[in-house]
Amino acid sequence: MPPQITVFFQRFGAGLKGFTTGQRTVAAIGAALLVVGIIALSAWLSKPALTPLFSGLKDTDANGIVEQLRADNVPYELSDGGSTILVPQDKVYDERLKAAAAGLPTAAATGYSLLDKMGVTSSEFQQSVTYKRALEGELASTISAMEGVKTAAVRLAIPEKTVFVSTTPDTTASVFVEAAPGATLSGDKVQAIVHLTSAAIENLKPANVSVVDSQGNVLSAVGAGAAGSASKQATDYQQRTSDAVKAVMDRVVGPGNSTVAVAADVTGESAQQKSETFTNAEGALPLSESSTTEKYTGTGGGAAGVLGPDNIAVPGDTSGNGTFDSSSETKNNAVNKVTEDRVIPAGAVKRQTISVAVDQAAAGGLNLASLTSLVTAAAGVDATRGDVVTVEVVPFSTAAADQAAASLEAAKAELEAQKQAAFFGTLMTAGSILLGLLIVALVIALVLRRRQKREPVDLGERLDLEMMPVIPSVSVLPPAPETSAIPITALPPLMPPPAHVESERRRFEIDNMVAANPEKAADYLRGLMDDRQPV
Image (cartoon, rainbow, N blue to C red; front, side):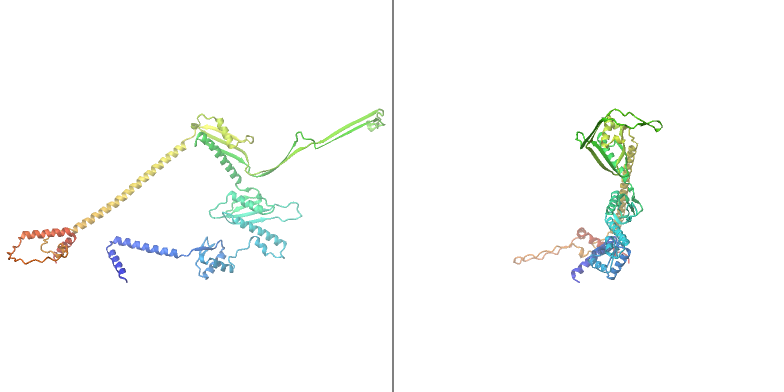
């Protein structure tokens, strides 16, 4: 092992030995978490990206494909309740080709593909049934492609054409729809399904299409149209009218000072009306004109008598002259003819009533007639159909507002109390932690103080050379110049210093040593105290 690595591990081990028990525990937990994180990250990075191989599979098809993947040792995952199979992205195309070669998935033929399998020997009944199945399959596939629709099924009731009946029954259709998870079928989407189905089949009216969801709810009934369409149209109209009137009243009396209620009676069924109107053309010349004149003059002949009593002819007057004059005139005038075909859709307003209440405190000197005119114009009121508009100035009740204000104040007070309680709780927790830390610090201080109690010892008895102050090193001096010898006379012997001087010198050296290196001084004192303990 290289010396650098060896030195690193030695230093690391020495550092660990210097840790306390708590520090070692925290370090071990951190190291374990780091290892687990590295392992999880490596597993996530090494995990292959999965891509859908097939989706919307049946149970039998999914089983066959899974067996194929197991035989090929290809990892896979199932989702959407087993109907979707996920495989690594680099295995998608290979597994799809193998599944296609094995005839998987075995989806039943639907739509116009059924007509490809018909032979020339098929009977008329088989042809009609197959054609109907093809239409049903195509419609079901188209409806299933709509957003929010999971699956769909269509059943057609097409009457057989025959010459033995004068009238043929109408064609009807039933549509079963299963909504996707989290999706809802709105009224507009139901109407789209109805019109799509009716437009694809000959002689199929929208009123003859029924739509049922997976819960058994009738969304569109035969002869009634979409369920709830009339009520929805009434609700939409009332909302639009109320918003228009409310906008006007808010600008006049201020927001919150008026209430608007609209009740509309709308038609629930559609109708078709045809009318013809004839009018004379003023000042137009006649299209054709003819006149006839007859005039006769002559004497009378023997005329037959008239019948008398008992049917006996009585001779009349046979004498005298006679004249006959007659004239007639015929004119064909131009006439304007207007033919009108009207389709009355469902949701037409038959009658509506509007009620407006204005707060008395905000009304002031407002004119009720002017307010009524404004409401009438904003709502599109038609008096000929019996619409009614009522505008009244009444004092509004403030009980709900007062209760709401009191509830709001109570909620604010409760929130403030919770904040204060949380603040005091935090303070108590922090105080408890600080108190605990203070107690721990005091205990440690007492233990250290007990260990550092000193005993008076005569340090002059034992003086270690290591405790002496280190003399700084002196650099080499240049050589001294040459000198001549000087005779020196013998000096008298030095007298030893007194005992008290020697004691003061030692005390001074000890004080300097303690001030320079107090740790070594403390270790030396502990050694002296251990040596003086009785054996």
